[in-house]
Length: 244
Ligand code: UDP
Picture (cartoon, rainbow, N blue to C red):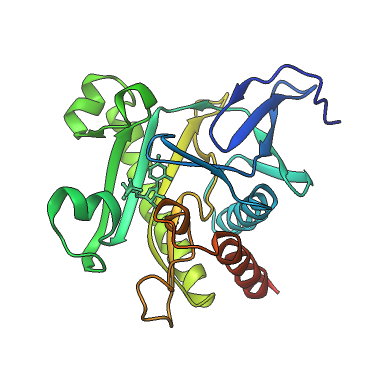
């Protein structure tokens, strides 16, 4: 049973983590709160909690079917997800298929340039330091993961990119880039954790040429493009349609 009187284990920008009666299982509550630019911009996206929870649940189930181990168990309510307890590796793994966001800002590559192959990047998950981009050597120096774990994370990430890229293509959506987080379970296995949603992915309507209208993700909130709720609902509707 959901015990909301229990002390929160952790509250992040978009989710709250609660313990359950089973120490192997945690309950994630998805909030409507939205933040950007390391929480300097704050707001609410009405219905986001339920939408992101539903999208993430659908994507985790697709990944499970494709053999990618992840923390998803089930959703006891529309904005709640039960997940396997893991120790989160404090590294944000970003995969990019098309240049956007910080890749454009930091390299000068033009927005929308299709990359010759997916680019996997690692960022240190540390708000105080502003989530800096890591080199592999820094990541290993900081012992954030072992070399073997890092290899496994990279292989899993590229696999996830293939599976989700195809899935979103079937939804008429281009998977531009996204962020993943991994955790270590009680058997020391690396599994996919956190969430995959329009908060953590760049998703473009594949049929829409207009660079503002095509955006179906948190960039609508970051860049004040308007109709944020509508875009998130659109993604959920297309995901549901693809699964039906
Ligand atoms: N991302 C995320 N959380 C973060 C940083 C990035 O989910 O703390 C996602 C973001 O939504 C995008 C991808 O990772 O899909 C790449 O983000 P980028 O590095 O371009 O950062 P931004 O331009 O958003 O600052």
